[in-house]
Length: 554
Image (cartoon, rainbow, N blue to C red; front, side):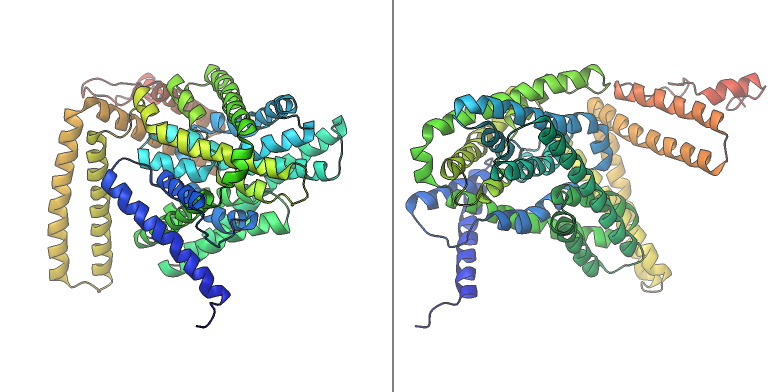
């Protein structure tokens, strides 16, 4: 028999991974509520324990260069920019100063707990502490966590990975050069972190804008899928390997830009469906590969040899995570109208999972690096604990804290709303095709009659559902009002820039919109429920009355 070529052997190994994944998928479908990603990891651990060899090297480059960019890009592209901006203060506070302080604290404690030199203990902290978007995004989606909680945890994960990689890279150089920590070294490291982070942000936005400008004048969804693929990998490689800034932050920034502004202004409905379906499939396949390989490549023997120090690392990682999350969110709550509930803080502590980024970083250490075997065992041990123990108990924690996941009513509302949007899109598409002469009149009328009837039925069902569920109605009213007020604010600012209104009048109008937004943030709507009574008397009405005008009183 002819020996297998390298490519053929690689395909056989890859097929083995997906056979395992297929079996896990069938198991999860039969069992029900069980996180698919955690099941993949457990299956991989079983493969490792049984000694079954999957000859795919889980390397630093494979994770960072091949697997991570699509996961980061899809996670950012599907993040609502409005929700992200609303929660940007706690997200940034935890992702930047929070991570830096936690690295310092764990590093300092690690000198005593692990017996490491300070720089090496700091390096371990920088490797293990970044929370992992791969795990968090998959797990929260499966559990149906509340949107704001998902944004908080996912947003922090997406940002602190970039900061964590930069801190790790800086400490790695210092350890290799056997430097000691001094004010000059700390200052240089701080500058490097800021430059790498801001540089990555600028690269991502510039790359995203370039692809956006191309897509604005293009209506070819297959080509646009390729363009987003170029953007995901291109922004990462351009930032990381050519400009030496943060590739992680670049990819996240590019994904946020193209997934929000690009989706709104540069994609047709068909293109949106094609692009987001493609990326959803890609991330599912990448998640499958990475979780099986993490389990299969876990160094079981090394972990058993170092179980005591791994146990200490697990406890300290959780303790430092709590030591950072509670004070920082508490401080943010004191200066914010939208506070982070205590129950959310508990979930954010326990939901700080660690996997692909820490494992990629520790796999990138050279064989002659100090304590490399022990560091690898510790990082894999913390990752395995966070994914299996914390991951499997996440649903129970959400239930115990009464952090409500999607209710049956909410799911029905999302179903009706999603179908209503699809019907609107279908009506617009039919009208466009009819105008182009691509849809005969009689056929168009059949389409229009069918879809308009369905649209009326959907609107009736949505109205009845909201009427029967006043809490849901109030929630959707506030969400919608917040978006509308932000559009109002944008229109006023445009009018000021173009000279339609003077700056002093514009500032007064903006102040009023801000007052309305503050009321909405406090859970109070400015939209009247009683047709005979205004919920909020706008400034212009008072001025119009003073001038002798009586609008609405005819």
